[in-house]
Length: 265
Image (cartoon, helix red, strand yellow):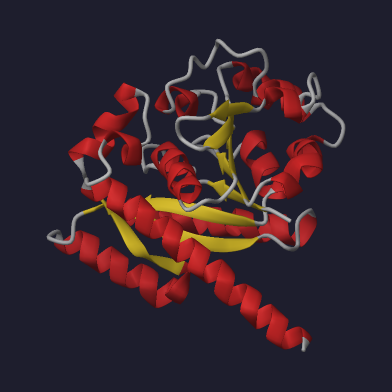
């Protein structure tokens, strides 16, 4: 059975889409079967993979509104080794339409259920807000991956996100947990970055990924060329960071699997 991970943070500009696209490509490079679901009305994940976000027959909007089966919305990205359900501006309308829809919180979970076993990882790129789209992603997900910059305002936003996580656990998805916190745009020469990083580790412990994603020109350039950074410049610091993140997640899965086997025995 695959694992669904929502990549989320209500603060914009922290690297959610960058992380979603490049983690998908890095997991695929490690021979994992990956689906990326773009749930952001900006539709940047599709553009970051070289697709026209308006050019497909179906999008994540159609999946959410049950206008098309999820299997028909999946686009195979042969050059990058993973699959994508693109998002576009129609998702803005979905935010409003879902408010009056039946089973509004579980629409995405129900849509992904038939294909979950077909993938090792399903990554959901969430919008930069705690709206009904994000709630759908959190209800569908097994865990949350939170990219964040190491700055004090980010800590305040993280507190609100953890509160939402608890609300979701207490109501519709008790199995939801924190996959990890990813420090992005990381500059270890900056005293503030170090201070906030130390606070994160002190509070969240091993839930903070050891991998940090640095500020990197090649990483910033890659979307304009419609490529994940490991395809644009595999030797860049940004590519190396996301390959390391994928490796860290895979090792964690293996450890957890071994622990579960021991507990069964």
